[in-house]
Image 1: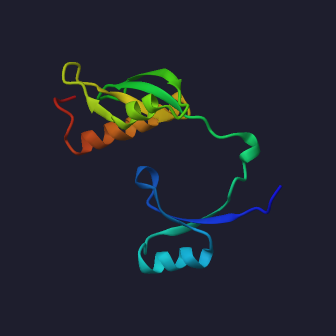
Image 2 (image 1 turned 45 degrees about the vertical axis):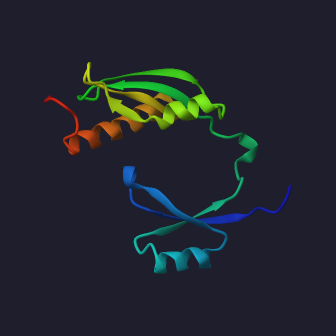
Length: 136
């Protein structure tokens, strides 16, 4: 087994606003990036391939239908095996079905609960932006 490598990830935001800004090989480079470009960022330190022996977290394709009130139906569509089909379906995102008034689409997630969380964040965003047609 080779030498373990540490990486330094600059992140910002919280919850659904959380994101990765950049990845560096040294903490010095990561801190420099924060000083120059991402003043609200923070550095997270990870060991590269630390859990390689456990296998990757497998993503599954889920079909999600969610009403404005958050009631949902989530169906497992298939295991994500890096297939073009799964990536294309998930890339289509989620949209409001004009006939039924519910949020519909495909997401890549680790579980049904994870798929529901992704859909719910989209639902909350659409309601907050007043982009969900009709009233409750």
